[in-house]
Length: 130
Image 1 (tube, one colour):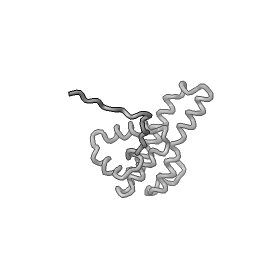
Image 2: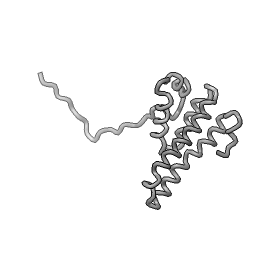
Image 3: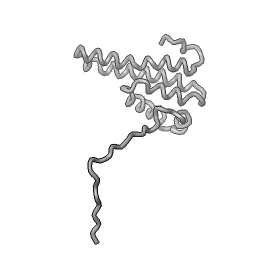
Image 4: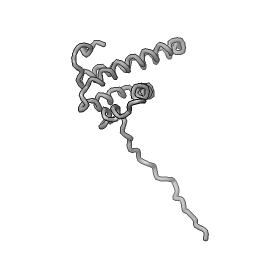
């Protein structure tokens, strides 16, 4: 992958560099869409995406627990792959969710995001009949 992580011990900086490769399938997909060739290569792109995610996840799994949440956040660097990432995590941890929960504790990518609720244009009144 070109980031020197294959033979050395992974760390957060190396994982973050490695995670940038997760943009490759999206770049290829957008190019193929512009060339009207996406359907022809859709299966190949899906397999490439799976292999890249598997590789990054294998390196994240080598991180100490204290760094693993940050490592898992790097899986979500490309928002277009969110469904692929969740699917991969389900496949890998379906039978053993407790180790996953320990590894992702503190992950920013999996926290719910607060959204502001807009005020209604008019107030609704509730009428109670006796």
